[in-house]
Image (cartoon, rainbow, N blue to C red; front, side):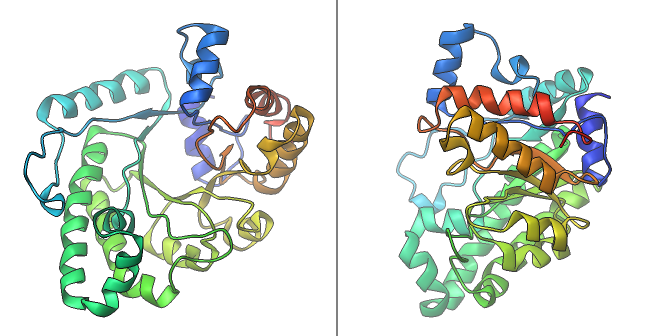
Length: 309
């Protein structure tokens, strides 16, 4: 079975030859890999099932106010993404578009964290107009990936803290649910079959039914330090695919033996009947020992078939 078929099977909530997986290395991990293996490709070396394509936005804001600066990729960048997708698909790899911050995250970037949380109450109309502007911009940016033919468009918003949501469910429903709905509908209008992954760090359990209702295919990050992954699998595992779930703050901070045990236990909980893509729940930074990065891949090799997990 090819990597692309393996991921597609997991998304149909079926078991395949083995559990699809990947890992996102941060700069320090990439540098250590380079020291070990030279100029080899990280994902290629470790046989990841999902590969990423991305584009750069033009950097020519000039004197424009921050909230007027909504750049889009140029024609050459878009064609480069399409070409990269074609090459990866020829190799039967699953392709995901690069992550672009979501509507709430963009509002925070423009206004600041506190102001973004207060603005819905102090300036309801003005804040609504701002969200409309951000949503239209994000539709364009995410739409580039859908048009380029990626298997997965990666959207999201960091709505969770370590133990709870950042905002009340009521505020989410009033402010951001309509924005996410517009984005999902826009992507489905471009390509009905495209899969949509929603990134969210922290605790997002109360909003998972909403995400399922929106038609989100994949919840990405699935931070086990913030949510009960057994509960997630039990309550929502038939309706959404989980991507992540291996604790970067816990499992990957121990010894290599701890990593092996932690990955195996996560697979035992999350993998049955498909609907799971194994990965650490964050991009791995320098706090994660290199030996544990190796141990993660060794664990996937040892325990990554559905019978062994």
